[in-house]
Length: 457
Image 1 (tube, rainbow, N blue to C red):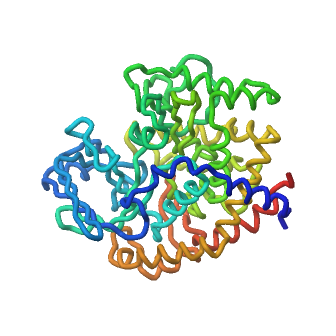
Image 2 (image 1 turned 60 degrees about the vertical axis):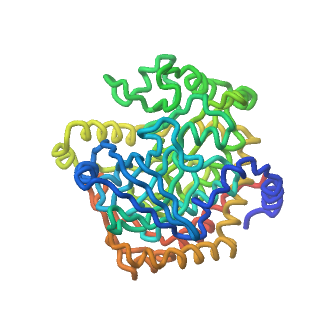
């Protein structure tokens, strides 16, 4: 049993949260109490160009309409394109609406962009939304989530997640500033210090495509602050790390994010694949903010043959072997071959996660991590959270029944809330059993295996 003292400290610390992002959260678009209806009208030839190739970056004009309970909003002349990574190769594509594509500064509500996420691999369509609600509970900045049925030129495309895009408007909404540098961090963004030359942080040796992709102030191409952060993180003696790191990084918020990531098995993140996060250098505080995103591979979802319920919470990023079939790789376009090779080289290397391992070397940080992890697991296993899963599933039921684009039967969908599914997909050129847990049984098993590991502070 976990020590009751940890539970008490954890609950007290959560009750005193400042709820600093409450204003940014309030929006009926993302309220999670109903499934909206979004309609896209677009020239059919333009649509064919957009969805015709998995690597398409084509954006075309469209009309966006959203139905609320008592009214309809229409926005003319928006940009429409596909988005995503592996989801581009799925039958059910994800899309992005750019309200400012043709008129600079144009917004819908506070948004210049809105993501329509297919989540084709999650039969429940709940994993990402539940993860986001946990980050919100911990009062950290994260893109908001809602639900919609999507119709394109009158054709039903399926149930989609409405996702808030992380950009300068996001920074303004959450941090009350949008002039700081925003970096999109993609694998292998391990935050390892590689020297002062930004060329060392490119995806390939001869590339100017950087692992830490600057999204705000691109024309200045200033990476000095980010490199300074990595230098502090990697090279500061542990007994001095707390003072120096907290001057440039919001450690308190990251420890909350870390607890959620561990609890929900968020492996496609900084912890395991060094992927799917942003860093915002907030000019108002002088500190970097860590912003996670992309949470469909959580709550037991697995592409790598790893049991995410049974991890060492103090050595969570430990790597397993990954077998890539070289004969399959060579049949792919050269660009994709390079990306796979780069990822495989990274994957087989030793795990370097200074933002995880070095923080847990600091006793007070390790103590805070323990407290947050206790709180997250207590919330996950509560009747309240279980009831919320049931409420959301009932709400999504009519849409899930008519959405056949992801090839799950209704029997499979309803069972996958609390049971594994015997389904396979090709991942890294091998057949992978990828739904070994339902959401509820993942929570129970992860809690039973990980909470006993939590140290007594």
